[in-house]
Structures are given as C-alpha cells and as structure tokens.
Image (cartoon, rainbow, N blue to C red; front, side, top):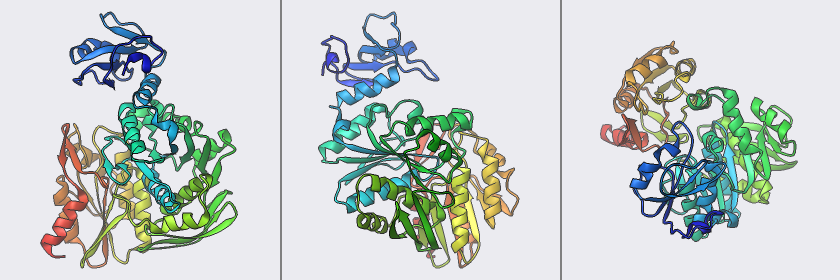
Length: 466
C-alpha cells in the first residue's frame, strides 16, 4: 500500500506496516511519532535502523526520510491504521462500554442478547477478543494498529456487531478515535488508575470524553459521576435502582444460583433471570438491556440473551468442592472488591475467606483501602502477590496490611496462599480469590510467567480430593 492511500501526502512510497514502537523491526514501516511519557520524535533514527521508510510527526525531524507532518499524531495513528486495514469500522455497528467496574460482564451480556436476536457479535476487552474464536489483543482496548487489524479479521469473518470495553486510557489517548459508536454506555466511576491520571477529575474527564462521542448514550444515574454526565447528555437512556430512571429493577432476589428480578425497560416489563449473583449484576443486566433496546432488540430476545449467558471468564466463577466453594473474580479495585464481598455475604452460610493482593507499579493509594474493605467484609484474609511487576511484593503486602483489622496472614507465593486458605476452610465456607480473574500470567520483573488462579484451584482440588 502506498502512503498516498493512507494520508493526504502525494507520496507513492510503499508501506507494509503502520506502527509506533521504534524498537520494532519492520519492513517498509510507516512510523508514527507519538508524544507521551516519552516523545516518539526522539526515536526516529532508531525506527529508521529497524525498517522505517517514512514517518508521521507533529514537527519536522532532522533526518533524511520522508515525513508527513500532522497536528495530532495520536488521531493520525487511528485514522491511518483504519485506512491501512480498509476502514472496517464503516461496515460495522459498535457498542462502547466505559466505567471502572462492570465493563466485561456487561459486554458479554450484550453479546449474548444480540446473538439471541440473530446477530453475529464479537467482544473486545479485558479478556481479549471473542467471537467464534479467540484473538489476543494484549490490552483492554488495543492500540489502533492492533485494533483495526482485529476489526478487519472480524469483518472478514462476517461479524457486523462489535461490543468494546473502552478504557479511560483508550479515551484519553484517542485509541478509538474515528469509530462510530452507535451506543456509548457508562457503568460507574470509582477509584482506579490514579497512578496514570493523578486524580479522579482527570480520570472522569477521560470517561466523559468517550461518552459524548457516541450517537446514543446509556448512563447509570445511581452513580454520582453518571448524574454529572446526564447534565452533558440529557438525551441519554438512564438506568438505576435508587434514582428516577428509564430502566430500573424491582423485586430483586439473589442466591448462590444467580439473580431474579422484574426489569422495567422503558415502561415494558421483563422477568430477568441471570446466572451470576450480586447487586452489581443487576446493574450490569440493566445496562445491557438498555443498550440492546436502543439497538432495536425485542424484549423476548433481551430476556433470552440474559438467561442464556451462564459464565463470564474471571467474573464470579464458582468452583464447588465437598469442603467449600471457591469464587474466582477479577475484582482489583476497592469498589470491585466491596461489590463481590457484599454479594457473597448475602449468600454464604459459613465464613468468607478472602485471598487477594494488589498490582505493582500501579495506584499504591488503593492498597490500604482494599485491605480495610477485605477486613470489614471477610472473616479471614490472606494477603498475597498479584502482578508485582517491578515492585517488591513484600512492600505491597505491608501496605495492604495497614488496612486489615481482622485475623489474617501474609503469604507472598500466590499458590501457597490459595492452598492455605482452602485447607483452613470449613464446610460451608466461601473462599474469594480476587484480583486476577481470567488472567493467564503472574508478572514479575517484566516477565509474564504462565499462571491461572482457576487452573491452579482445579488442580489442587483434584490432587487433594476435596
């Protein structure tokens, strides 16, 4: 493909790859200089040595290479990546879901409903990209070259509907710039990613930036920030349990087998039955129903799609043994951990034992808070390691311990921690293993070592015969 097929340039130079990492070895690459913690303009010579034949930049660079100067290289990266893969977004319908918690589960519910409606739908998010097969996307919202490569593959496989988790980082960095979202949905805003955004206002601004970009909006008005969003997007469809809204639920019943409630969807009544328990899943199903209503899905298919979804990888996955039940969940924020523990408290007949840690090189301010939450809502706490990255795991554990006021133990090795919790349990207890969910690795000093909470638990249960 020639550069003039991708940009306003009249250059006929052939391009075989669009990218932004100067360290990557390519053939005939178009290197886009992104500004951020590091400035890509300073690494053009490295990119040239690795195969770049032209660059996209915000100012000229003193090198002997073809240069296309633009006002914003991040938006240019998205636009050029889309063109390189034939602009697949123009032939697809997009739903984007943003929020601190609930994005993944809500996206899978939307997928299930659309499939009940006869539509072929894929999900792109924390668990990767799922359609009929799995595509590894590395990030919750992939960078534009990977994103559009994935969309091209989906379109070629006849997918016309895509539900995307849109992270705050993706919105702030224009990763989804140019994608025509038919519906933008907001779940909630609680503490997360402050290592990057610095404060909640900046974090919220990134969510707001995405929400105002959608053709239609769905907003949780039980959330304080959601009500602020509604002032900016008064045409939005709203959902909630405690504030006036277009979509709400009544007669909510929860058990270890899931939730059952009456959904009022724009003054139409649906009897909702969902396999995952917890009040947060009432919110997730309400959000998904509102999204699909906007997309023209009938009430019966909304009901069927919610009922048919039995599991979301890494979200409230239950492993029952003769001794106890073990719940694997991705909860890695204060609000996420609180939500899961409150849901467990409503259904457990015994004690709650919580096994969790906090990621390294991320918002350290939430560690003590999560320790306090685990302490307040658990009977026993096992603090362990969870992707320490380049931090000392024992330092992270000590910071979590500051908030723990109940009986607890610190065991750095995650496998030993889980085994200890299970062996300490009594019949009827529930063990929550939180933080990793469906992740398949433990990241230590820049290396992702193969590891899965669920796989380890299943092997341990089989080995011990419990």
